Amino acid sequence: MRDKAFPRAACAIAGAATFGIGLCEGYSALEMTARAGLLALEDAGLGLADVDGLFTCLPEDLLGGLAVAEYLGVGARFVDNNRTGGSSFLNHLMTACFMISAGYMDTALICYGSNQRTAAGRLVSALRGSVYEAPHGARMPIGGYALAASRHMHDYGTTREQLGAVALAARAWAQLNPEAFRREPLDMQEYLAARIVSSPLGALDCCLVTDGAAAVVVTSRARARDLRKKPVAVLGAGAETTHKEIAAMPDLCVTGAKLSGQRAYAAAGYGPADMDMVQLYDAFTINTILFLEDLGFCPKGEGGRFVQDGAIAPGGALPVNTNGGGLSCVHPGMYGLFTLVEAVRQIRGEAGERQLAAADLALCHGNGGVLSSQTSVILGSMDTV
Amino acid sequence: MASPSTASLGPEAEYLQALRDGRFCYQRTAEGRAVFPPRLAAPGDGAALEWAQSSGRGRVHAVTEQPQKPPAPSRIIAIVEMDEGFRLLSRIQAEAPVAIGQRLRAVIAGESDPPHVFFVPQGEQDEG
Image 1 (cartoon, each protein chain N blue to C red):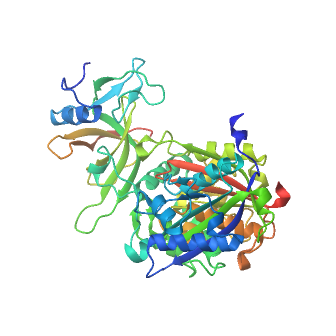
Image 2: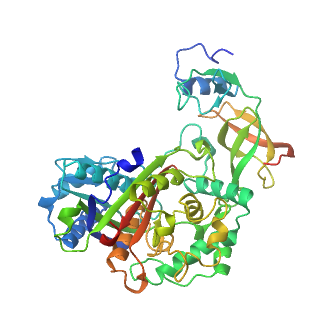
Image 3: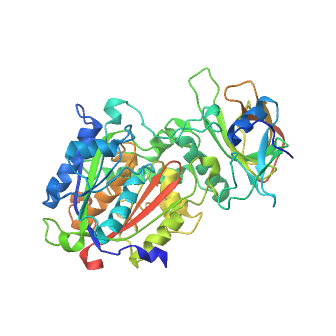
């Protein structure tokens, strides 16, 4: 069947890096992207000359893939500038694995950087409203997520406190991560008192606005074995797109993660119960609840109750966003690539104070648009291959 | 019902022209499946589409309130489910917060650029 067509464990992530998380004054987005790329190659023990495929997109340059190719002098054999929002980089990884396993290229660099906090001071979104949506002046993308949250509350009794449990868990993880941008303690009282931006979502339901860059280097598993770091195998991947604008979402409470997850599990030969961690794109607190349901960690509608008592926080049954996520670690506009970097660090045992005792299998999940594009990737240690 | 305009326009321009003429239209397939926003063919199967005029009646499917800088009132943004079975994003002009299930009536802002439809509360609340 087609979901199993993914080249299971044929490729591995050999290098991973972040750069400029938080504030990165004095750097352009392109420079940040290039720096993260160079750091990831150094991490892998490879050089620019080894890269024959480039996968990237920049926040405001629609042809940013070409800009990065020129800047680094790589990617002549293939440049992928796919931009499906924050899921882009997981899609990049999926394509790179197919192309490497097919023999067209050996090594791909996936990189991204944005200086939106120091340059713009606000979320730089690539979303443009249609003639049907734009005249209403809705604040987007938050409005789309708030509409989904309103429906989830109506259908399943999800509460503000349950959304708050997601924010508190992310902050608790961030407190263990020296790289995270927001590390001061957060309690439920403060969460509930935060100003409402788009009901039911308040300021503390929203991802951060930070600078930040990240990169990963992907190559064949055979080649990765001889490189500097322990390879992290790409076991499975799957994607699903359901809409662009929120009014066209078929069911506001069921995302494409249901299918993208099923495809990734089928390819990897593992299920949700096998995962040691989940690194998902928490643009807003409702995302975590929706994705945990759709990715099979709890039944539909139970996400709020699943997270409410600390199940996804440090010490909980299911570690989620161990770096602090988009909510408390880093959010330069398109967070997806950071899910891969954090999973790699955990699987390699490089996560310091937040290191998980069991860290062999990770589900990484990217989201783009307004719950529009969903991509799931399963990474594993060499023991899981 | 025939196309709302006889001019040779794309579906988007036809829809906007109908609004300027005071008609809120959507499309449907021969089997009666409602399609919105307007398209050249039904999404997924490419079925032929014909125009129909909406009753303008619907209800709140999902809703969010977005506070504005005072003294501007909060903006109420909703996904509206029309009685004909299609959904659209719009704003609701109301003094008080509205709940999911609230019945609504469309108001055509045909003079606006671009023309569009917003909603006002009307009558009782549905189950949602």
